[in-house]
Length: 428
Ligand code: ADP
Image 1 (cartoon, rainbow, N blue to C red):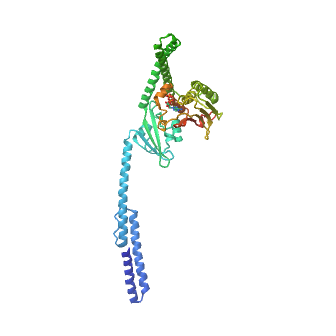
Image 2: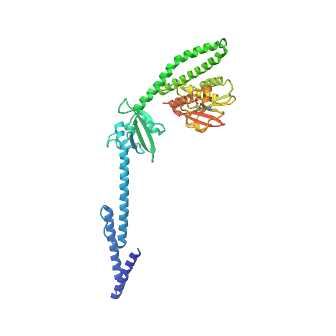
Image 3: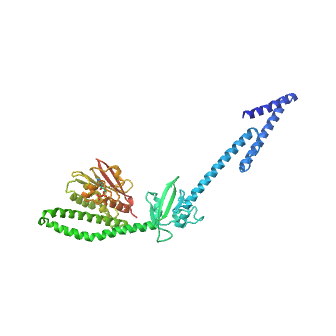
């Protein structure tokens, strides 16, 4: 820059001296300035022409313009190299996306198709380029998929029948990213579902087969225990234990059958909406009998809105929660049952106890089958370890959610939250 100033100053000085000597000082200065300006304009226009076609070599220039062109050329080269690197990376990502066996579909914020891989093409029957920019809900028209897609609750995957073949099932996972854009993963779930069905059938069959012999065993054991005093004392304890264990096995078989019914059948709604008062009062009566009147149990019906669902299943779920509160808290602990509205038009059933509570590390696993906080205590109370798994399944079938809050020493609160659609009158 200083060099350029010196050069301009030198020209002006020389022109000034020459003009002064010839008696035309101002004319000489103006002409020199005009010449310098023209030279800059010419360089500027060469720069503009080069920027318009950057692949060409930069024009030759010296002085300040030479430096400017050099710098621009250098930066341009750097940018081109970075662009090339990014392009290669993008190609590699696309190639690896193409190589995936699971289908991948990228959707923009309106839910229109932006990119997909070959597996998605085969699984969903997409075709290039006609489906590009089409809404995904026009291409996968299954109502459950449309609901799932629009509700944006993507924690759990969705399994539906393939739109291309009735005997195949697909599993969809959706992830939100960026500005409400979505990445949809789809995979063939047919084999997994077959295995799952085999597992369910196996458990259902075994439980069913065990039921009859167990009923016979329990029946005889009960008959024998009616004549306990006729037996020698050394047999009495054995007979009692056999009776208890047979009862435990019966409970286990009943719970397993209940779980497999919940997994394999559609929910059967009652014709009439379910009134919570009689249901909860009868559960309270059973719970008082279980506790031998040792637990004060209060019922707070803060809403008179009924619920739309299966009485048998809901009775089983609510009973499990109330019976657990009896089983896992010492005598004298008060238990409260609430049925109340929530702010979004839904309803919630809450079972609250003031017992020993549950440590935070167990909470996330409580609804797993056979998960027990204290296996010894659970077995001695006749627990099967399946109670909360049943509750979770029943609620899932009713579009409801179970939340568990508990602190050691302060008690536990089990809340079954039903959305507005499950409250009678609002279900379409
Ligand atoms: P179970 O049939 O053995 O009772 P559940 O699935 O109903 O099994 O419960 C799982 C575990 O959760 C129980 O073993 C128990 O340790 C714990 N639990 C459930 N309810 C309560 C409660 N109200 N207070 C303390 N612990 C509880």
